[in-house]
Length: 163
Image 1 (cartoon, rainbow, N blue to C red):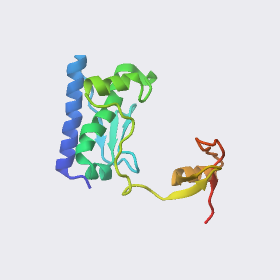
Image 2: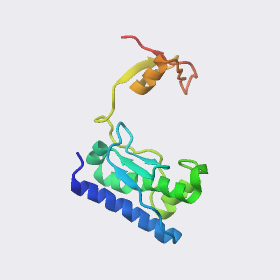
Image 3: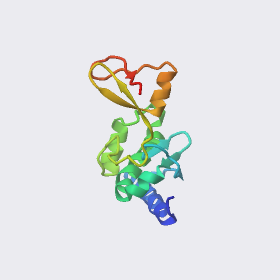
Image 4: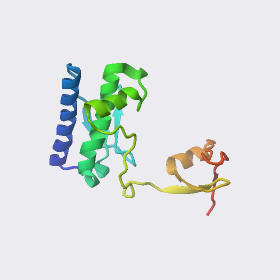
C-alpha cells in the first residue's frame, strides 16, 4: 500500500531525526528496523527492546506531510530516550518531551489529530448514568470476559446498550 517513494521519504525522515540527535548529543545512535504494518487508529509505535518502529500505512497515505513532520520524530524520540535513559524513563515524560522540543524542534504532543474514520473498527454502544460511550471491539471483548470500565465523569460502571 505504501509506495517505494513514500517508504524512501519516511526512511529519510527517520535518518534526519537521528542525525539531529547525533549532532545534539555528540554521539552515535543505532538505527532501528522500520515496518509498515501498524494497524488500527495508532499512527506509529516504537518497540523499545526490539529497536523497531512500526508505522500505519493507511494513516501515512492519508496524512503524508503531517506524518513525516510529527509522527516520525515522535516515535524516533521514544527510541532515543530508551537508548539514553533505559526503561526507567516515562513514555511521554520529561526526557521524551525534551527530545521532542529541543532536539526535534517539534511540539511534544502525545497523540495525533488525524481523521481515523478509514481505520476505525466496529464500536459498541454502552451507557452510564450520565452519557453514552462508544467502546472498541477490544474493550467490548474485555467487558465480555469480566473487565469493568467506569465513566470518568460519574464514576459508574458502563453497561452495554442491547440492540
